Every structure is written in C-alpha cells, then in structure tokens.
Length: 272
Image 1 (cartoon, rainbow, N blue to C red):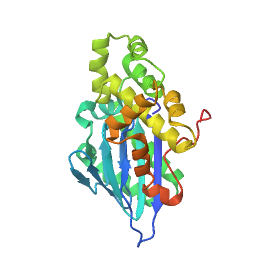
Image 2 (spheres, rainbow, N blue to C red):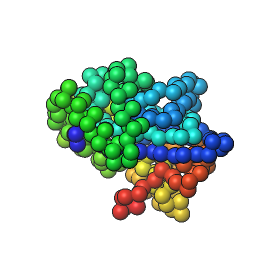
Image 3 (tube, rainbow, N blue to C red):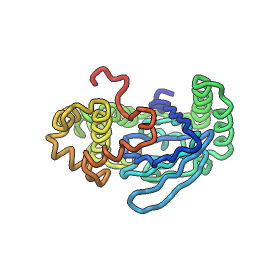
C-alpha cells in the first residue's frame, strides 16, 4: 500500500443551514486523488472554460494545472485517497495524460465499488473507522491488479517527495533513463512534464508556507521554496492561477475553511 498511497485526507465541515458558503479556489497541487463524498457533494467549475462537473458521489482526478472553483454543501465531508504519481496508471490501467485537468465520476472506472465504499464511509462511526474502510478498499484494488513497481516508478515516487530539491538530471539518473525516455515515462505517470510537475510542487509549497507563516516576506518564501527570487515566484503564481501571489491569497482568505479559522498549510513539518 505504501507504494501507491501517499496519504489519506479527511476534510469535514458542518455549516449552519442558513449560512451562505463561498466557493473555494482550488489551486493546482502535485497529486492524483480519488475522493469520496458520503454526505453533501460538491460542484467543480473550471476557471478557464466555465465547464462544470457536479454532484458525483466519488471523483477521480489527475494532475491539475489550473484553478477550479469548488462549491460545497452545508454538511460536507470528503475522504480523499491521495495516490503517488503513477499509481492510477498501475491500478486502473489508464495513462495519467487522460486524467490531466479532469474531474470524472469514479463509478465509470470502479462501477458498484464506488457506492459500496461511499455507503460504508457514511455509516462509519468515527474517522478511524473511515480509515479502515479505505484500507480495505485499497487492499482490494491491489489484489485485483497486483501492480509491479519498476525502477522508474520508484524514482518518480521519490521525485514527488523531493521535487523542490531534486533536479531533472537527478531524476533521470535515478530512473536509469535518458532525458527523452524520462519525458515519455513521466508523462505517462503524471500527465505533465517533469519541469511542469516541479513548477506545481514549488508553487504548492510556497502557497502552504505563506498560509503557515504569513509574517514571512515573499522573498524569504521564494528562497525557501527553490525560486531564484520573488519575480520567479510571482511568474509561477500568474501562470498557474492567473493572479499575483497577493491577489490569490486574498481570494484564498474567502475559502469556506476560513470560517473555522483553518487554512491549507504545514502542520507537521518541523522545517516550517
């Protein structure tokens, strides 16, 4: 399981029925995910095309390179299985390129398993019980597919953990691939190029660091996240969100979790 699952994430909010809930600007992040919605679902709107995906009980999505607006219900709980890059290809047999910027009904790939798992999560009496449901589900997937891990799989998984520190040359060396071979394999695993994946990983680190340490200067954040300077960081924000760092974080201040004094940041990394 540790070869395919990076983490489980539970997001659970209970709002007053009369409350008006703003949409959340959901930025690109370096992850592939299977999300279950046991109670209220959400509506995802694409900022670039105005396309909408709505009210799926479980959603599978690959690497995003753009912002989506997520609107949630008043009784909102999402259980996310965040996979290592490449795991979706190994588990479901589909190239990651087919899932890039896609937010699809998971039942199209998993059939009745989606309803079974969603019902079990809804009936679970605790978060711990939800974790047991997820563990059983992932073990079932592994038993059905028995995916084999290659040298390239292992190298790309380590790159995901070290993307803001590793160079592309280091990744190619670890994977025992030429740069051209690496590009092809990496696209199949992640849906984007190594360079674009690294850009998203740096942006995600800067976004979370700013939320965790709002008193840090933008230059300090830029240097801590592997950027050359503030202009380099600002260019990345503009490319991935269409906004400057200050503009995007002002938008993030309106996210539903801010109602409870919460934010997306670093909670368990002693470095920050």
